[in-house]
Length: 67
Image (cartoon, rainbow, N blue to C red; front, side, top):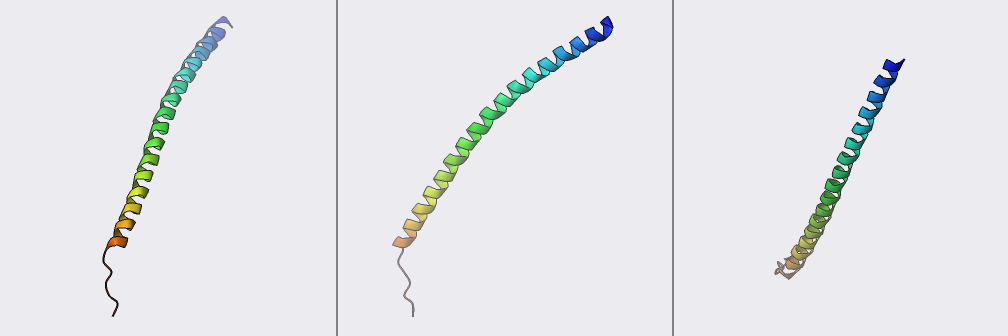
């Protein structure tokens, strides 16, 4: 019985350690995700701004006469 309790105690300690590792890893993943989402939003903004600038430039181009 004592041996089984020692084994179970060792397993619980190992599980607790693994939980802490996973929590730390999850925190790092959350940080990376947040940074990536920020960069994605910035890129979308830049792309939309570029689209507007191109559209504005296209309106300034001379129009061909329709014959």
